[in-house]
Length: 569
Image 1 (cartoon, one colour):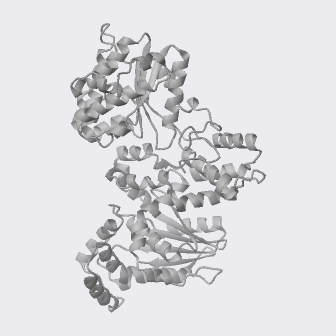
Image 2: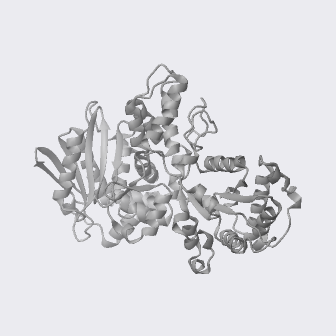
Image 3: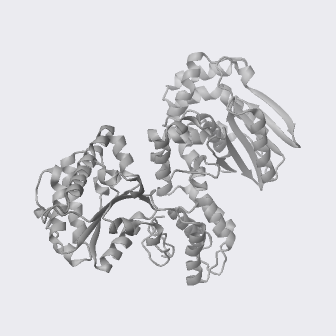
């Protein structure tokens, strides 16, 4: 979905190059003019596909059009795999030179060198010398933007920032010590945060000194709901095709204004679902269908989330979010802010972390459980789970109890490439054991560790709910939709299975996290909202001193006119 065939929707850069439909770009970030006029060096960061590059294009064009200063933007993206600082600085000088060559401003273009004539100097002053050369030879002040600056490897990053610091400190000390009037580092993350984590000892040496004032770390926000309406209305004005109000409401609900997703939903609805038939109104149902397509198809933007979910700092936060617990995240605000800056999470009305939007909330567990699902025995997918009209949810969860007791350990061994003979021996042994069989303490300790290896991550508390999610996905095999709802601090995870107009609500929690009464109350609220009368509460007991007969339990109870099945695992 990197190209939009009908050249219609444009969300300030994240999806297509077309300028047919576009929200006012420059108004998306406040205080930038103040930063430039005040001769500040500042940071602009926002999640991937938020429109940063397009914003820089408009900003440089605006500055150059006003003819009071010169401006250009230089991408650092090509340097992201270069670890050698000398090689990186040579490449960065080449990128600056390229930015000058393609500039629409003659004065900047005239200062570019031929590729083999860029002045040579040691890497520790190469960039500062180049920027000094430009500033000295221009008749007006210079503004420079380094796009994707946070992708630099540690050694090149330190070298680059040191030169920016020195140029910033020495500027205007004489006719030959000029430097850009204003400079911005643009990327996914706050560069000061990146610096501290690649070289903590450097924080006290002033390497981030031009960027160490909090108010100078600006961000590119998501669209507001009314801005989504304005964008979609441009399509209506041009084509006559109407987006009903509820379609905008659903787009906001699914995306929370993430620009790439806003654009992608519109594309799916207009082009793929309604086949460019502008006589048909786009409804909320069309937007919901488009969201389901994005979730299942997982375009490059969405799939790139997986790489982020492997980072240790992200794992520490997202493990708590996925498990519904507060966990370590309360103790590490830096990690929490990092995940917010990446656009992975946001704070809800109660001040608790949750995935940044509903699409991410649906996609993330699928990303984390792909390997688990592929490793599950194909026989699981043969379990009879419906009669064509309704799901046998109680029977399905009883099957999961059997899986949890008998087959999970074998399954985890298989993921760890245990030879087939050993797998068969262990499987036969486990299947012959009575219900009261208790896995040894050694096996218990390694069990969740193997779950973590199975998803190629180090999620601990979330592994239980993710495994249940994977099991349901495998059994249902696309015949029904499985949805997740996470909210950090709630102590539980909600799974909803939708089939034939009915929703089967399953709350998943770890024993001891929250009193049973609280979980029952929460499940009751969801049942009221869905109009259903029956729900399931799956409780995982991690006590190694209990045997399987104590853990594998089933209790059906009436709770305030609702039927609740309490499923012990």
